[in-house]
Length: 327
Image (cartoon, rainbow, N blue to C red; front, side, top):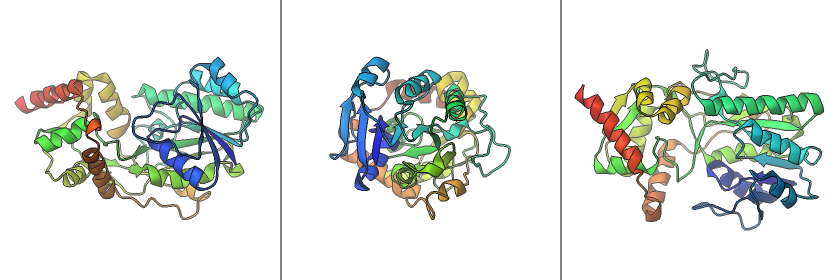
């Protein structure tokens, strides 16, 4: 099977690329060739071009067709318009990586299924993903464009800490500085390791039953944010000093940070993975976050060059937490 990944070296796509090659897929990556910590599989072909330059991408792909194309880095309808122009009549399946944050917020009922409405009034990122899905499904209905939609939730690898600010959170934990947990920390959340995600995703490639369909792929482990902080602290050998701040208050300090809470993390996220199991029978995530947290801490300990504290975010946390503690 001849597959193209647009991107392919990101948090989620890197695990999918590795597994695709392992399973004998003829994989090509179209990207700008910029990756810090995730090596490209040796067996994959790499085409260096920027998909944001449609003319350059069209030239790089001239004369080529693919059984499946996956766009890991499309976020707006302009990006999808480029994809449609590039791949009409040249692909057996086009997979768009959407987001589970597009589901109704707050959800009217749990668990979330693929039939849950797409409606997020809080976060522009999610509304953009919804608009992308709508454009692609219109192309499917009107012209038979062979789209499959995949909605990851909070998927991580060894480089990604679950809290806003990345490594800054781990640095604060180890220094004994307080970390911020939104609201009371008791909302329910699902974290999915990227290798688990890949085991359900790769079988979708070239799968005719997936055309015209949407799937989410997540773990079935559900944790509160307080539990997530505790597990990360245990992996780091410390007890978290957590300060709880309402998401709406966070938004008054930083709109982007607040929107990511109000539009996603502040709401319960429990998923029914029955639909993906119709394609991948028996799929279940195997890596609990306790193991993933140890992997994250070990990776940062082994990569001092990645231990980058964001001074702006660090100062923002000090200001929000300081103001909270004074009240």
